[in-house]
Length: 180
Image (tube, rainbow, N blue to C red; front, side, top):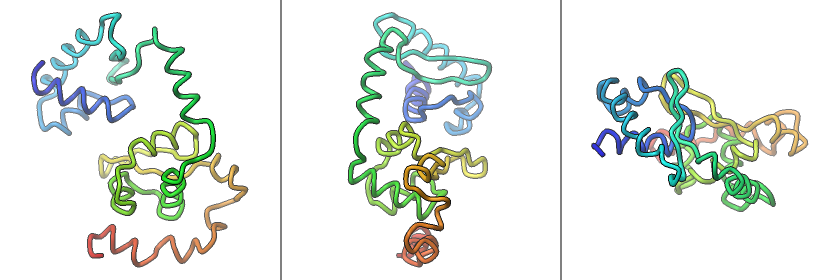
């Protein structure tokens, strides 16, 4: 598999959502035709019944998903992941999102000092956080959902303790600006 195919496979894996060949080409700094060729190679790679993942293609969107034959085990795993109480890292992450959102993943990780990929995935699956496309930055932003507000018994985020003070706190502003 060529280098472009490998990179596209990684991008599709971490994105966890549909992407266009045009967007992948922009990220990779390559031609859209190179991306299309690589996607064809990946379709062949993941077309076998023994693959745990498959590559879906609709209109212009591409997404790496679990093999439909493994639906039951995937559902069991997801159910186990989203049941139960939130962990301390999940609580810390949703607190930062509550007070600082909308926020990008790199900003969130800069504040928390750790990788937040799995935590964000879990919060998204639970419906407590939503991802919004930010066309200006290419990076999505994250914010809490109505379900989160309902779960917390809040009408708005402004009801959180010290929200006005912490939402634009000088320390957070400095950390995000890189001047801490």
